[in-house]
Amino acid sequence: MECPNCNNVNIVKFFQETLDCPHCNEIINIEYFMCNICGTTFKYTGEDIFSEVQFSQDEFKNLFGASKEEIFNHYSDIDTMSDNIHSCIKCGGLAFEIEDGLYKCTKCGFEVEVE
Image (cartoon, one colour):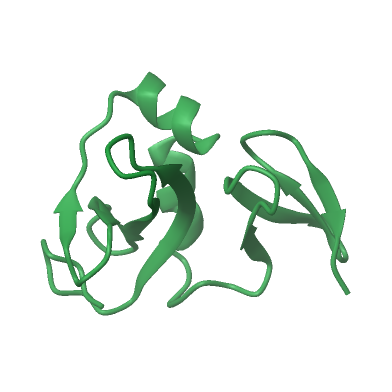
C-alpha cells in the first residue's frame, strides 16, 4: 500500500475498528493508516478503497487515544510498524511498550504483557 497523497510506501496502520452494518448486520472492518512522511491520515474499508479522513483535534484524540501529532512524531522516525507498537486487544487503540514486554493502550489504558 502507498500513501494516496505522496506515494510513500512505508505507511503504518495505527488503529482498527469493527462495526456492524446497520442495514445488513454484516461485520465491517475499518483500518486507519498514517503516512510517516506527509502525515496524511486515511482509512481502508476493503477492496483497495482508501479515503482520506479529516478530524478535528478533539475528534482525533477521542477516537484514537492520542493526538495526530503524537502519533505522527512516533511514526516519522521509523520505516514500518515497529515491534514495540500494537493495536490494543480490548479497544483497537494504539498500544505502546512502556516497559520491557508491558504494553499500554493510549485510548483505554488497558495493559498487557507480551513475551
